[in-house]
Length: 217
Image (cartoon, rainbow, N blue to C red; front, top):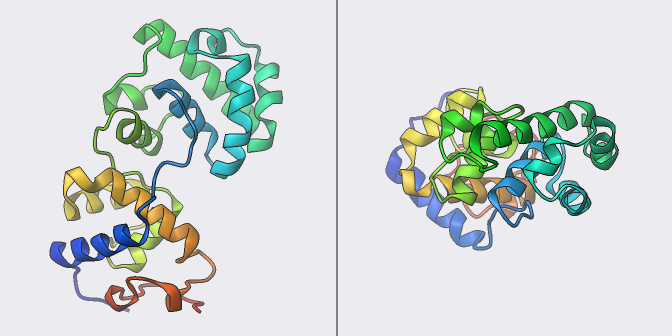
């Protein structure tokens, strides 16, 4: 079903209402510094934040910084992160990323998109999480929730993560990118879920064209 193009003003008013509905929307990954957030975000791929938050305290206790993780044995890391899924690939990424930080960035997490995505295991989503939440540099994080909600709201017309990011960045003011992602993620988890859209409880149901919405309550 075709819908009329959503204007920037309409999108901003919708975002305002969503932000008012989820005033506590924030990055749910527990971390004390940019490196911990980077590692936690890599682990969060195909895994819940709750599970990651159960794993990272043990991981960081064993390997408290990029220097120690860079020297870690692959099997030791795999054992610690096994419950996050895809643990073999993730363990390689964690060690490789930490080695790159030590060898190329003096153990510091870079603050530029180009440098971040050059690290093993780091894509634009992870980079935007780190930029927006560790360095207060606006970044539009696109995960499954953001992509789904933006599509249902009629904010985007594409399905690739990169395309969604580009369209959202054009639609929303730069200074609101980071928080907008948090709000959309919270809304996706609590109300506009993948299998069922709880439209009866939605704070923006009157502003939503419900693009692609199937089962709803």
